[in-house]
Length: 340
Image (cartoon, rainbow, N blue to C red; front, top):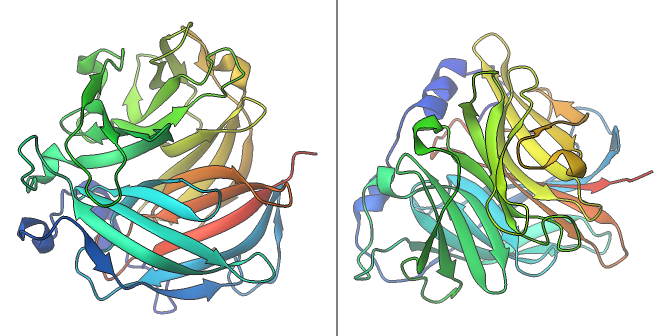
């Protein structure tokens, strides 16, 4: 894990962020769906050792540290809820689909993960794909029974029909508009999300790269569907890279960002990008809402989704990618985003 009482293991974490590590389990042939047992330890404090709940406009609700005896579990790079705050679909950058359910207690805090399943991604003939560079899944969007996935290394944005019992090969490849020569091999589309259905992009897909920079040092992105599609950039703020994002009900884009250095370890940040700046030819920007370092319950935070709770609260859920490392953790965190 990134934060531990025993100290910082930064050298190993640096390797996990920069090296292509293939789990030995990937090469094993298996049935279409693998049921996986998940143990979830509740996280009640976001700031380690403090009972603080408010972090700027975000209020910490609770979290889970997830572990499993399965070698396939982990490396979760993106997820989206199929049912608000409950049933979800996700992708691992080792080439797996996952499905599961987040449960909550009487106080609406996350309390466990159930019905968790994983399935290896397959080719057109239905055979599992063993090469990580072919299935480095990083971004995920869901709409009308279709999952749109962004892949790095072999850069592409493709669509799949959602079938939790038997995910098949993609049925469509999309034009992501950004010139392929501008995408860095391991810094491609980490964010794939649908815009606000009532906004200027009418629910069209938006993709944002992790760290593919233009000449001005800003991050390549594009609106790839809708009436106003086109390439734009997002202003790079400090040394943070973008790992996921989702649109808020008011049309702004909430981005999850990560930073790492040997001197200070890993950090995460949430930034709100003004919706009107998400436009062809524009440089989109917006304020930082929250920033956290290794003194908080974070890890390699890569997944984000936004949803509305049954009491009307606007929720932000985060998930981490443990890189299949015993030194890192698979975390699930929930916050209320207060709008006033």
